[in-house]
Image (cartoon, rainbow, N blue to C red):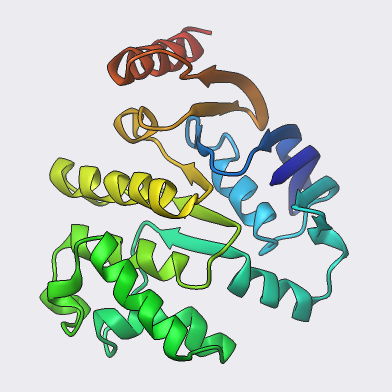
Length: 247
């Protein structure tokens, strides 16, 4: 599904070069729910931006399925972002002038692919995520959890290969955070969605299959959930974070 190999990225500020990613490699299989964790400055957001090709990597490869993203033209990349990748952001990024239903349909509207099947899919997504009752409402009229569930539904409207989520629970209370995580789990159960989530939140990460922990631009450790109970997995994640701090 996704294979990242020896990824490097640096930034030039004046005469100083800052290495942000220093040879990051990992793979994600179809249907996996994977978290990326690490302290501020560890390279999490840069990694996400490289995968989506919003910023170019200096070295290394990113394979989405059989496609090497760095070899695509800007027009081809735009198509991949619209059809093969679904995005969920911390600040929702819903359009205030559109209803919940039209926000969900937005990627299909941009891609010019709205048809009766797409409209039925929007209705199905509203039902799956429990937002059918608010589909004619506007973002200003709904809660934070409802906004984020709308954003998850929007990310799925074009049946993407993968959802990329950037701190999706960062601005939410515990009840809304759980609603968002439940929507990811439901997307995986109902549609086989593959989810790659950047997060600081060990509670959110504890629902994942594994967590890739970055430190100083490198993969420091991968914590597997395996047969562990969710709370045991969360304890292991927290132990890893504490160990990183001691080192």
